[in-house]
Image (cartoon, rainbow, N blue to C red; front, side, top):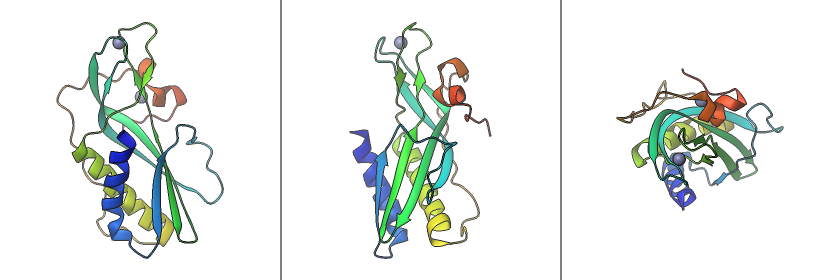
Length: 160
Ligand SMILES: [Zn+2]
Ligand SMILES: [Zn+2]
């Protein structure tokens, strides 16, 4: 369900890339930020998102949600694999890791930054806008809790 929104937002942003190439986006929770397959390029981006515990139904937002993109252009087909780092509820003792929900405005920014990176990595473009898009921060952000953050556990959650 979420994937559909990511895909359509990505497609819209990727219009700027038009060169007759086809770009596809897929979720892949197995990509490893420390282990890039040959031919792939990486982009790691921090964003804001919210989470909902599937046990107690409590939700929380975080401005420290890491999203890892691996991209490759092969012939005229481009692929982007996305891994969204999860967080878990800090009240439930056997809480599951939950996927983040990125709101439309931030998702659009995220996809525009991604497309800019694709231009640089796969089409040798220079960055025309000179920076990344600014993300909107959520209002009630809970303090970051490494014990409940997948990115921290894997050692690549950043505060930058
Ligand atoms: Zn919970
Ligand atoms: Zn973290």
